[in-house]
Amino acid sequence: MIPRYSRPEMVKIWSTSSKFQTWLDIERYACEAQEKLGVIPKGVAKEIEKKGKFEIDKIDTIEKEVKHDVIAFLTNIAEHVGPKSRFIHQGMTSSDVLDTCFNIQLKSASKILDQGLTRLLKALKKRALSSKNMVCIGRSHGIHAEPTTMGLKFAYAYAEFKRCKERLAFATNDISTCKISGAVGTFANIDPKVEEYVAKKMKLNVETISTQISPRDRHAMYFSVLGIIASCLERVSVEIRHLQRTEVREAEEKFSEGQKGSSAMPHKRNPVLTENITGLARLVRSAVVPAQENVALWHERDISHSSVERVIGPDATVTLDFAINRLAGVIENLVLYPKNMLNNLNQLGGLHFSQGVMLALTQAGMSRENAYRTVQKSAMDVWHNKSDFKELLSKDKSVNKYLSIHQIESLFDINKHTKNISYIFDRVFK
Image 1: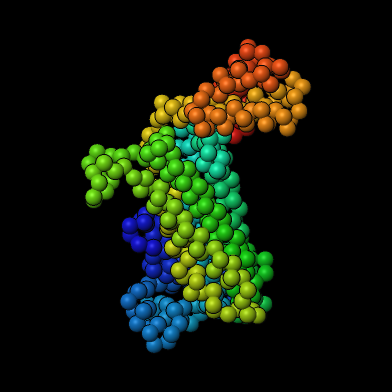
Image 2: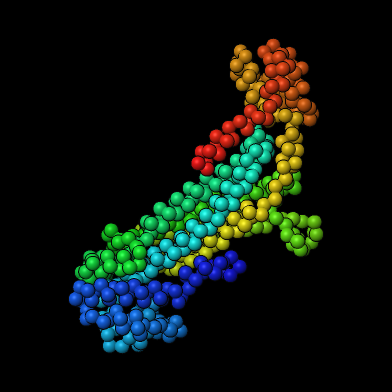
């Protein structure tokens, strides 16, 4: 997490002051609940609300001595609250505060990620609709296949990120739990009603069952979803990078006035934004395996997960937030070149109609094997000699036995490839 790839709103969630404020809120709500249950005297929560303060530097100083961040925090709070501070943290363990806070941070991060996905979806839909019938060549293995439209590329991405949005919502709900059940999750020294009360106040779900910590399969799911979103960002970025290659140039990142592409070559216009997203996606995915390895802890808990989460929590969410919004900006400003799309489409003399010809021959009575062989023969001629595919087929006697010149002509109709575009769009955007 470095400023270059960070947005302030997301960074704020993971700031030390925000974290300590959340810890203080959890402790205060726990006291409110215990007051209602008659476990501690009334007025403790008010004292915390009124006097509860913390100094980050002081907490750091205390932690250097006690080697425990929650104890250092509670010690600093006690200095401000006074005698009634002895009732703070009654029956609780450190993870009651740490895990509940971490889940709140992840939930808050999800809200920002969701906003970014909403922006991205809006941009993709707008581009899909505006380029719905913008014909271009489809590629498999990087080689010309059959015609598609640029609009379908955007629609495909729209559906992809709509699924990402749904996955994030599920993972966020799954992670949004409150855990205040004591040292090994048995509520031995704290009433379950405290957990229920704090959960309601913090707008969280009550953890079904816990040990000293919340179950880490929830976190593994959450970070796995972040990794999937990152992979989807990379897929679209790689597509744009390929389309921007000089030999293709069907799409291009906006090159702003005054922008420089290379320190050595003044002519360069590089896809630096999508290359950047590709790299950032790798970083987000690097959090997935550690999050999954955190699931298997010793007995009711060990601390091996803690250091991992202190890093991947802020790093993965901050980085993903930046990458989502960077791609949204790329899509919003992407430059398309329809003329180049048509030039590329027609580069191979009509070979993209080969399947239609083969099928027409089989329907006219030729075996599929012979039809494939016959069509491929003319296709290879086009590859080697830059011939015209339709002309070669029209002169092929084996083809003429089954198809008339008029029938061959009718097979070279681009509308055959675009006739179901509206049907697909209806399924995506309905």
